[in-house]
Image (cartoon, rainbow, N blue to C red; front, side):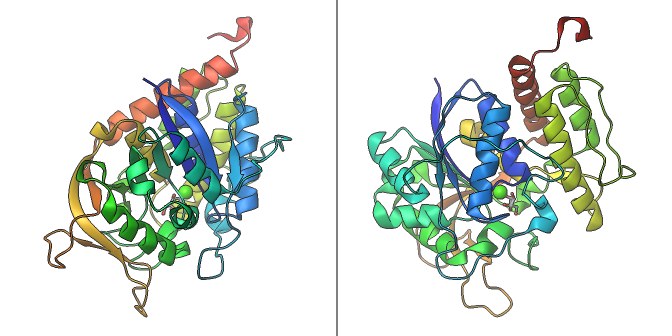
Length: 350
Ligand code: RIB
Ligand code: CA
């Protein structure tokens, strides 16, 4: 059975892989994409998504523009992490697809009302537009079939300040509104939270890109390396493989520049895989809240695992997974999809 999914993204290199994962998943039907400001501006996020949809020869999928700024503070973007346009070194051809006439928050509310109990929500960016949607439709926690959030850090260092994670850092007020509201979700449908604790174990390496190119029957199969120059570009015959390679190589360079190794944490496609198949994740319930006032700790997500606050759990936090099983699925789905969309010319089949 195909699952209807609303993606709320801040594309973003790993957000791009989340989109490709869902486009390549026969069990997924993308009902809409909300473009949220975060890694880059909301307008650039929207442009990146319609450009990817063109590269993938995707059908008309609604892409709705989100709010220009977080709900309470000015926007902070991170081009140093995701590249000047948010897709690393990739230079995606601009698309002429039209954006939705309705804003992202309205799309969330309308789609949830139109498909009660059916929609899976996947948030891989700041929670700005989901918070705005909750103000329009407070019943969202019971209207959604499932919500998966990539965000936060619990028993794990932050990636933006010592204790907070980027998506929550950009809009902590929105994150608090979302976690508070989803206390109303039924116990079996608490938001599944993929925090840095687990997503920083999902380490893509150059060998994964080799496997992707081979699966896609793309050539040449390229082994990118830290010695490649920034201006280098992939020559892969398959456009999806080519743009993924150019995007991810920027992410490899970024992680290496922070002494994390020549690798890239695949936060968002992991969350997408969990959204389609929660059995990929081992979870533990907790009450999650977000610090807003701390001088050093603002935007830190705090998990009460033991009920010390006397509040019911409002989240199922992922505490374990099998990274290699995830990569097997990612490479199989995206590789087969890339080959189907851009089949190798007859004489090129290796
Ligand atoms: O902290 C990682 C998250 O922040 C990922 O979703 C990445 O795309 C950025 O949005
Ligand atoms: Ca993201």
